[in-house]
Image (cartoon, rainbow, N blue to C red; front, side, top):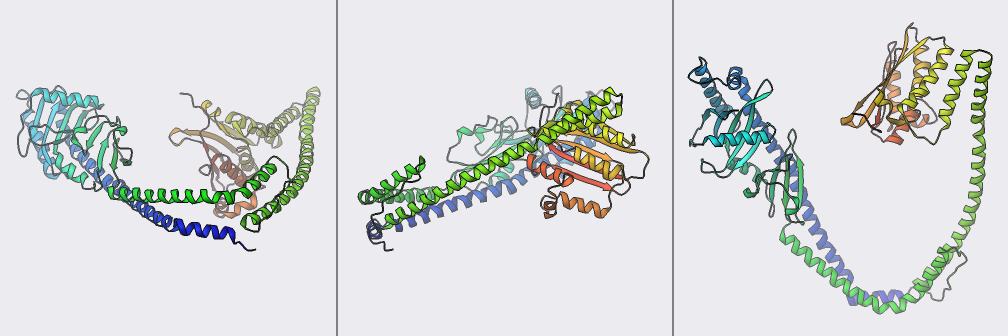
Length: 573
């Protein structure tokens, strides 16, 4: 088929507008700009999440290690705690010596190299000792009291603050470390460090345009900021430019959060704006030429659209009258072929629906048998009661309850209590069958019994434990134990089914492990089984791949099945 008119029109339009070259050029520019921006973001992310985070965490560890050395001298802690007065106690000299030795040890052995001063303050505000390797500041008594109040507001936990107006004549980073005796705060250790050292450590990773590094604690208080005037204020993310790139990294073993903000390079923004301007210009040209060509192109398309609307409302006899030999004419022919195919498919689909309805009717009829069996068991139970055969009545009732439980297919989740009742009915039948040979123990807290688990995940495993573990076992004391435990922090419930039966050999345990591995193709050959593989696959489909069962077993010692299920339901208290 020859396509002359449409092809020529498009060719002339592209020659006049030069849309394609401009569009490609703009696309290349935008792609390169976006790549540079993304590379900068990934570089900043790696430096912040790996290098800067590690440096700050190491610095925090050094602070805590330095302050913790005070606990190496028990007599010093006792002196602080018992509030011993100097010049009146026989141990005064020892206390002063211990404080001096502690300060010297910290100063010369600590990994911190920017210590400007250290001093101990008792909980009553009295300063017990101080050490200043350089300038000796003169603090008023109110200063010690303010530090103690600051410590109390932090919950008597290690606390860091930055002071930009100090007696040292330069900004200071203060580390406040509570001293405890028998669990109670009795004093405060203050370590003053040069703010410049910490700032140099942090800001050397601030390489981007208008970059800003912020450290906040759990209360969103700003501990450190590239802009010193923001320290000790509340962090407000709305105060930063919406166009800024934001990186947030929680610090390990700390309540601190590291935040980094920076703006993209203005040069990249300029190139991006220029590219968008070029794209806008190209779009304008395309609109103008498209408008000029629309009259000659839209008429057959509108006609085709109307016929499509007829198909949409169910008129599958709609066809397009093809008059042209160009692309639109070719499209019309393809539409007619598609409409004819759809009409044939719909007729075929109608036949399939009739067949499916017939199959559903047969499936519903097939459900009559379980109901008939359930009613028959109820009748047998009544006859057993009339004829005073309690064992037969108990077996019939237990079996009928099991069938009723199995027939409730609309309930995919049931409570642990319902699943345990189903297991008890099964164990009643087993114990009647084997004359009380098997003892069972169910240790489940009342709160766990009200949680929800997938239906029929316990009974198949219990049945395996009885049939393949306890009954073949040569032991005289056959015990089946079911227990459970909740881990709120993991958002999971763990159930345990344990028996002291025959157990499995090492080869059998390896095979079962492969069977439970959802990535192993071996379990595909056991989909019709109601045993371990089937239960594990069902849990994975219903709850997710993070949940399932694990089996541990030893020959002649027993088997241990562990369920991990999602925590679904409320735990009182």
